[in-house]
Amino acid sequence: MAITRKTWKQELMMSLFKKEATYDAGVTMCAANACGMSGFLLDPKWPDEIKNDKGSVTNYEHGNTQEITNNRVELTYTESECKPNTIAGLGMLTLGAITSTQDEALASYRHKITPVAHGTALPSMQAEHLKGGLQYAYKGLKGNTLKLSGEAGGYAQLEAALIGSGTRATSATAMAAKITESWMKLSNCKVWMETGANISIDAVLTQALENISSATPDTLHTRFKSFEWMWNNNLKPQDGFGGGGVYIDCDYGRRTQDLKFTLLFNDTTELDYFTNQNPCAIEFDLKGAIIAAGAGTDFYYGMHLIIPRFHIKEAPLPVGGVDEELTCDFICECEEDGTNPAVILEVYSAQASYLAA
Picture 1: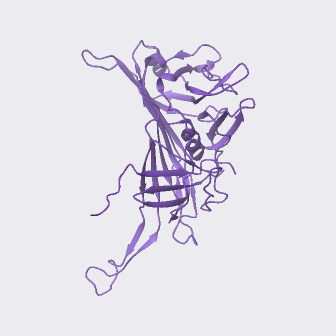
Picture 2 (picture 1 turned 120 degrees about the vertical axis):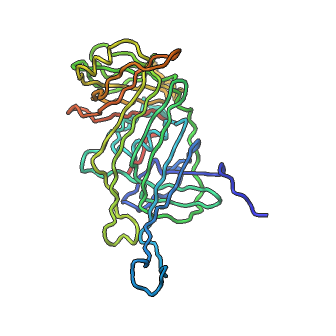
Picture 3 (picture 1 turned 180 degrees about the vertical axis):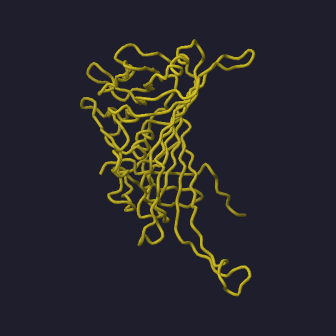
């Protein structure tokens, strides 16, 4: 009787703590550089480019020859209950710039992640996936898209689309240990929105307090139903010459971000923001379990997601059927304010650095 491989029998490690020194060079997969992932779904695809001779004169009606022209690797990684370590690592992979700060002398760190400056390359990493008894090492992985989302009563969810160089090889490297963290529960998340001249983004962010206003922002968390934010690098892989059938690099195009969310309808405040075309800023502040007790201040796992400037692009009119709660949907046009990054993602974790040189 044949042995049936089980879908749940999978392991994955990513070099979230160390980036490739040069594109497609790979990373030594050890505890200092990589970590095991848990609670994930991974959908690897090998959309290789295939060439055959059916368009040539060969004296064969149905052709006779086929070969792989170029190797391709695409990975879609999902956590339905995401963790701070994953947000920080894949956030850095996709956005590209990071400033890490230690809290006091404790094993507690905050990582401010922002889009890399135009003209600066994104980092790349290595991952190894064991499934069906086969373990493959994928090199030259860059983050194409990163999506954070969630609904009231649930958890923050993460989805990242990664593009590899095409380099893939079987491996027997031992899997790195998993990082133990609690899930990011949305009942611990506060949300604020500010408009116009009162928008002011703090240089140093404070957990569990708003960081986007010089006055008193709108408190939205009691009305929040759901949200979805996505960053897209619009990666453009480059074949070049001399790559031997894999990409020689992978560069970003014109980057975009999307934000949409749903609130319980209250009054015309947000509708007026649309009618008057007020510039807005929003902050999601999620404070989770404690990392370490400090000298007067304790430090917690968590994150800030701040969009410093956007406009509401469609009228958030109340909707709902008989016996339903009235809600309003927000479709946002994310912009730049000329001072702050287009997005700020700050993550609190027990790891000292992500994708370091």
